[in-house]
Length: 150
Ligand code: ZN
Image (cartoon, rainbow, N blue to C red; front, side):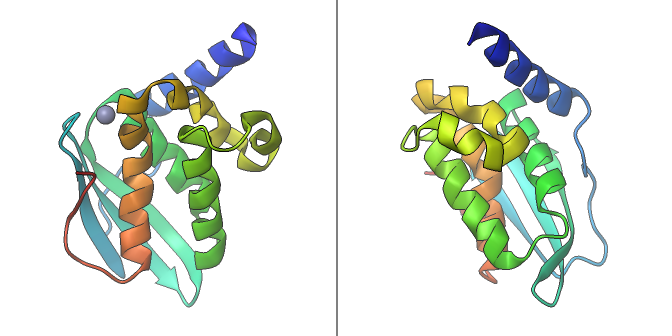
């Protein structure tokens, strides 16, 4: 298990160092700022919808390695997905980081998102990992006010 844990740590380190889709978006159809005051994480998530499909997704902002890697992995996995696929992944991911689901069962389906399974052992970091997802959820719901994890 420790080799697997190391591999997943590497995913988080790599995405923190070289985040994917780390840019603002001029033609976004929606964007929202999300804050995690406990850690100081703050990001803006941008989405361009094409009908029911997430045609493009990006983010800007700053925060800890876990929050930035989570936003990066999320953006790389959700491009081209439908709104309902994104919401389904959000539910799976939330179960994973809150330790509700058995990680082994979901790792295959979640792909690189499974890298965040270890977060469930650190309750203070759950909000770091889930902040980008909560923010995206608000964008997809058509909201525009900034959200906070508190
Ligand atoms: Zn954080």
